Length: 388
Ligand SMILES: Nc1ncnc2c1ncn2[C@@H]1O[C@H](COP(=O)(O)OP(=O)(O)OP(=O)(O)O)[C@@H](O)[C@H]1O
Ligand SMILES: [Mg+2]
Image 1: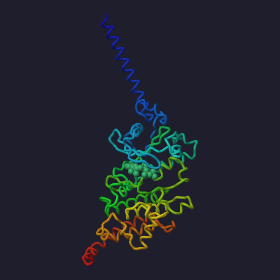
Image 2: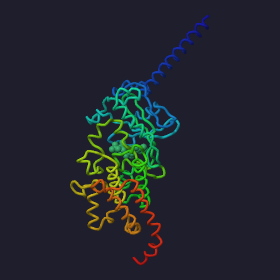
Image 3: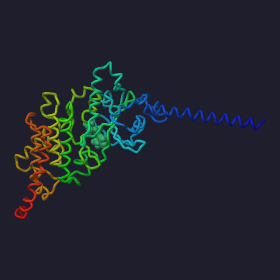
Image 4: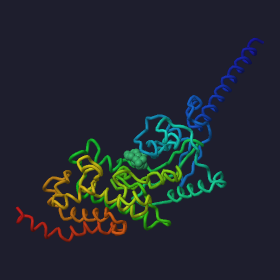
């Protein structure tokens, strides 16, 4: 009799423990869907417990919850910019992606802690809201772009409050770090003329694709070295083509388009950005690649950027000496090619937008820089002993 009483009470205890565990597991699952782990979501006032929704632009072998879990802490942060924080996120299947968690507009305005925002609505919710529909249409367009020199937007997630943009992960960082990072300052290790030329052509090809092969044409609006990333083969990939701005609505466009040092001069009176403004920004980037200096430095003088400074150096006939990344011998060897590339950069940064070439022409001109070498190389090799 007592044996069966003990057995019944033991069974009851096991059932209780199992029920409690199950309830806790269910609770955890809800927390994870809301962007937190465990019961932590409720303790954080700026996280709304709601299901994460994902809009994917290709087949993805992970869920919105998997992505949300990766951006909870600060462990995976690899950078932060004007539109959000970027995380390196490893998915359960081992795939690594980059996730940009957008700043929420109200927080951005106040410059303080994140505050609740009006979330991007889903397609069905957006029907009552024409602006939102066009914004989502723009993101949809950007999500379907495919080119070897473009960082692919894989999709985006929202829980009704936060917005996460999912990108291909670029393991070799940005051109900004490569050109101007602490370890690369001065003689930029490993980045010889061939590598610089290849990066310049890659960026030009990516931009040419956006301008000439996409219908409608896509203006980048913010081309600069931190928006040029390097893939595993050190191939340049253009990133951040207007996606964050599109998702955050039209407002940022009317406030500022582009980044200081890269904005075409006509923007100050037209407040318009188009493909020709991108060509100007590309010219600035090309000058940075050629000379190895930042677009804005104190040495250029009040109100001057690398374009004004380079023009002064060209007039004085000593612009090549400014390319400190290369030693004298290297500069001699590739002088003609660098001079041609410099002319392309100066053309791109013409004050008058109509005088700037198209990105398609820029690609051809930059490719010819190297073709010239192939033709000239044997003759140049013979000439060299006479020089010394
Ligand atoms: N897809 C990616 N793969 C690897 N690293 C990335 C990726 N996207 C961004 N990063 C890194 O995160 C940093 C911050 O990017 P983010 O776009 O937020 O800011 P930014 O480019 O410096 O400025 P802005 O917000 O004006 O574009 C980049 O400089 C880059 O090093
Ligand atoms: Mg960026």
